[in-house]
Length: 244
Image (cartoon, rainbow, N blue to C red; front, side, top):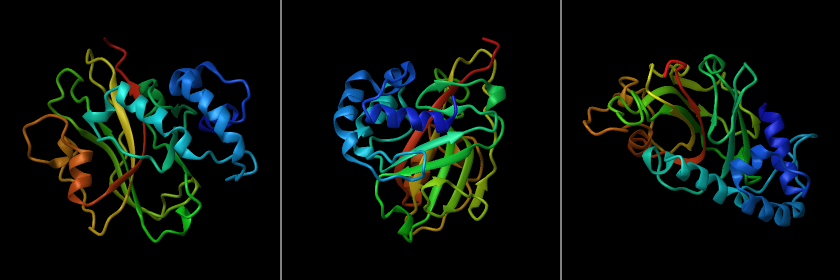
């Protein structure tokens, strides 16, 4: 399913139209009913085809998905999303809050799309940072290498719609998922941060994001704390080796 279709389905849910099984599974039927009641009041758009949704109406559902698959608290602490973060790979497959993708469909850098919850987003002087991290290296049961940094880009200018990363600074080059054989499903977590005042430097390595710590799942949270980054958006997907 493409990211554009996913956004259309979210809008359809808000407008009281027929929803899809994917939306019912991802966001929950209870919260979809809340969206039907609330979203028709809002009409601003970010393109001729897509209506902007007030993120407050789906924040609870996003947080519940992050919790149900352990992204909260394994990777991040609970937070209040202020943007809806989407990604679509050149293969046409999109990251959709916990869907499972094939390794072969995730090997090229994805296109990132931002739907902000506030009209002031694009006028901000702040820059943003994007990362993709694997908290399940080498496996979810044995995360001795986690987190593994798959991508890190900073100095991103705030923009609703598809991000232009050409002017951003890539600190860690994109590396597609490569879960080892017989290690089950890995979670791949996409995070979007608002920069603080600190100047970001590239991690010294991908494993554990270069941190010299013994405990498992050291990565994005530690890096964000070190450089005063504020989490504003999150999304994730699963991927596994075909040999299980």
